Image: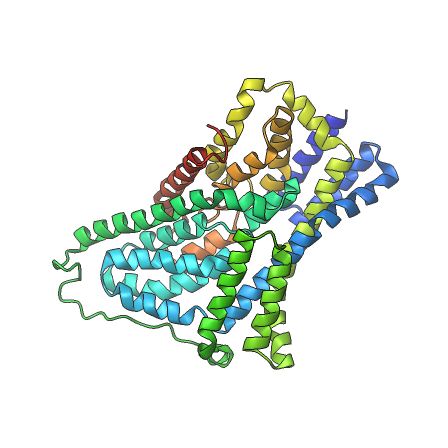
Length: 436
């Protein structure tokens, strides 16, 4: 009975989220609460909610400070010199232009926000693609690929996966670094491949430049408000802050929350010593940060209820009866292979809080570490999958900025993004993250 209640709870939650009858925050809180009351948890339910939120509090805090930190240094103009150098480097060579677009998207995606990545990359590179007559599907394809393989400890899928299984982002992310490097290498390769195709299609000089072209590099124009916020003389200081916080995340056991708290404090003090400006910068990025934190706390309520009430354990015990012992070790690899297409079916909240915990707990009962399912999921589920999924608003922003039809983008990009997911999954097998 408990397992059936758990299944119905998840099914109803998935339906409410995917049909947009409820927001993820509402569905993650109210549906499992009702399920727990039906299961007989009674007045113990609030205790489960508090326990779940307590476990996720450090992770939610990390996300709030991380997104605000990257927002502040972006406001200060840390990326401006990098963007200018990329634009000067690419010239009118299609290979350089496409690879440069991928590198720009990679840097812009440091804050883990897909919408910001697209808003920085597409308007910056679109004029070059338009003037040279290059295929704009390649513009959004390389941008999507670069953002997709650039999963970081503070990105949405990583935080959701870690919070759903109550594991640290450090333990989840560090073993995946080699696979991510492979994914980034594949992005560069695809940029070269697409660039060569465009060279051949457009007809180029021996040096790879467009014949009879007078197109020179361009620079992104800043608004007056953006100019007031820029701190170009502090470029290297801000770079140092980014390197320091990333190094702390990867190479030490210092809490990421503490690292980003200190980094944000220093970024504000150095770039905007005026108290009023500090408040304005925090307010400017508070909406995005608090929205994700709210979802994480709601997810904490969900996982706390599902775990405390025993529904998750009951579902996993029931599933164990249908999975042969010898098959369990293959589940992470299979998850990695299908994780990217699952982005077209499940939104991140539905998958990471509804589907993945059941699979992970089931294989753990069969002797396979649950973290392997989370790591396999990261290989594609709303990482390489989010820029083509109709379930994410960022996808529509991407195609609208470039003026490309969604269907054309999906036909062009889905095979490449899925291949990237498969290649990274194989890399995980080779590096011993999980078995085949």
